[in-house]
Amino acid sequence: MSHTPHQLTEEFPQHVDAIARLKAEDAHFAKLVDTYNEVNQRVYLAESNVQPMEQLAEEQLRKERSLLKDQIWSALSAVSA
Image (tube, rainbow, N blue to C red; front, side, top):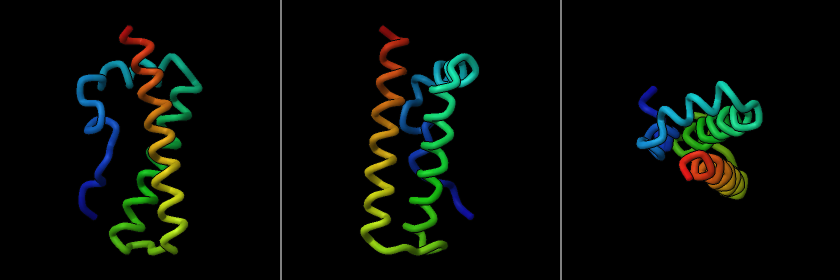
């Protein structure tokens, strides 16, 4: 299988160290990251037709991924401020 797009290290390359640190120190942040990775993987599998799903379900997963990414960005911004 090829590289999964939208990995957090690609989305926030300037915050790789902060992501690792927050994952180790903050259980809520770690859960956000784990959930993001799971949802992102499901979106990728649907988009690549490895595990196809209905269009509405795929769109819902994309929205969930976007919400999680926003929450992660908020946490990273609070640390950077």
